[in-house]
Amino acid sequence: MTQRATTGPAEGWEYVIGLEVHTELKTKSKLFCGCPNAFGEEPNTSICPVCLGLPGSLPVMNAQAVDFAIRVGLALNATIQRSQFHRKNYFYPDMPKDYQISQYDVPINANGHLELPSGRVIGIERAHLEEDTGKLVHRGGHGRIESAAYSLIDYNRSGVPLLEIVSAPDIRDPEEAKEYVTELRAILVAVGASDGRMEEGSLRVDANVSVRPIGETQFRTRVEIKNLNSLRSLVRALTFEGRRQVQLYEDGGVMIQQTRFWDEERSLTGALRLKEEANDYRYFPEPDLPPVAPDLTLIEERRAQLPELPSKRRGDVVTILPQLRDDLRETIITDECWPYFRAAIDAGITPTRAAARCANELTALFADIGVLTPERFVAVLAMEDRGELGASQVKVLLREACTDPAPAAELMAKLGFGARDEGAIRAIVEGIIAQFPDEWSRYLGGDEKVAGFLLGQVMRQHGRQVSGADARQALVELADEARSGAG
Ligand code: ADP
Ligand code: MG
Ligand code: ZN
Image (cartoon, rainbow, N blue to C red):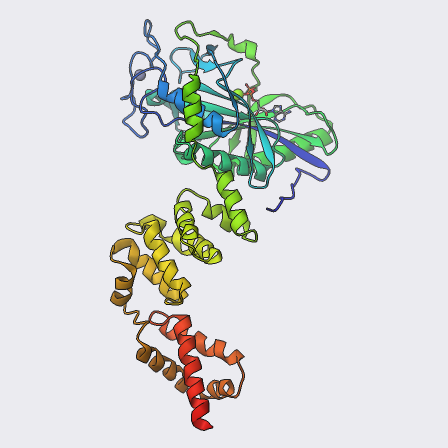
């Protein structure tokens, strides 16, 4: 695996980045009440006294959320521990209780790590449970609060379970931040905790960034950029902010710890507010909830059931195909591709072919994959391995196999791939010979390289009907006959 060269924000400087990723957990109901945890409902329909924070309502812990948190903790190699919910007090209209129920000094998951495709290991400080707030929509102006004519509030999201995963400041450039979020997202999806949809807000990133001269060992003051909701915004915001900080230092300025926003349209970060300290929030233990004490048997059960994670698949592919390009490998280990590649390898398909057909042909078919199961995919590749199908035929056949459940051999007949009819193949090759008499006599004269040209013509004109292997066989036979006839 290649080690990516890091690019600093300026010559002689490096980034220091730590990410806080908020992921909505895929539970049926909200964290402390029975309201459905659903996206895209009519505003303010999935609500009740608890998630509206009405006086006298009492929270009840959702066991499924704890279960998901444990699975994520295990997948991130974290310590899973008894934890306590706290009230984090602040006022904002998206949160009617005036406090958020979150975990504070003792999170359910602590001290984990995650390995990137590059082999670099990023520390995970904590992954704690908390409730989401409602959603504010600012109307008029630029959709930002300060320029809006009015604001709307939807409490459907209020009380949706979140897991906040906080990395150590181990990330060293914006591209690596993107790699980290991509890998984390794949893990969250693999353990079933999240649907990973950034565009629907089920994965939201706050990015902490500082810069320092290369060689300096201390960390400098950081800035937190809020609510980056695409990988593109993440990379652009970090790049902009790193350069801004270097400029500030070089101009002799003083960095202040603050919270900033990213404006995608204007491509800049702007100051939101000074950074709050923990004591601004007046944290105190939530008196209406007992501590979360994960059951040891449940933890061991979940550990045993952990699905295959991306890092394991990556290792498998590297073992099977050490030379495979990184981007192809990353495509193959996705949840969509992997069952097909695994089935092909298990069936003894040539690994390079399995990799190429997965990364190229198969990915193009995912939108309408229909009845193309891994088994049927493997059946087509096996025919190609045996030389019964050419590359262009494979493409057509795979597409057909998405909608038509018939066995591959029947599909071949239906598509007019008369590949096994020797007479027909000979006739096709003879047709090409007639079109290129000069090349044919050069080939007969012993110029083997011309075979490639002649076969290329066969495939270009008749690739749907003839496999390369059959055409080559026919060409060799015709040449033998011509030579013995002449001699
Ligand atoms: P807060 O409550 O202030 O958001 P957290 O502990 O939740 O604090 O998150 C702090 C984040 O900032 C972590 O991801 C951490 O890795 C990162 N971080 C801490 N110090 C620095 C620094 N000097 N430069 C960049 N990132 C940092
Ligand atoms: Mg935080
Ligand atoms: Zn509710």
